[in-house]
Image (cartoon, rainbow, N blue to C red):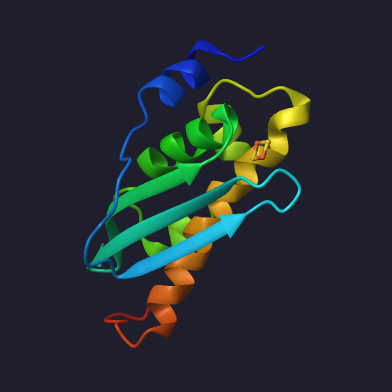
Length: 128
Ligand code: FES
């Protein structure tokens, strides 16, 4: 049912944890299942220098957010905003159809964290 990549990211989540003084934070939950993801970012020179997360969720939501943090680190803000759910799913070698929606939480939280940063007055560069 789950790929070996997904099981690895679920059992060994990358970049799990809190950034104590983040530049942005985003939290997204799914009211139907009760799962939620919170993402923390730091920004340097218009790029994501650090991306971490906390999760209360299913294995698919944890694994997709774990691989998302790897995909997002080092990207410009614009590049990170363009990471979509299917890119995350492909990075895990696929997801069962019924679990595709679980990949929405991490990407939504990342987008929210970036928007938080851009609206917080900490914007140092014109990211577009
Ligand atoms: Fe809720 Fe996966 S079942 S995010």
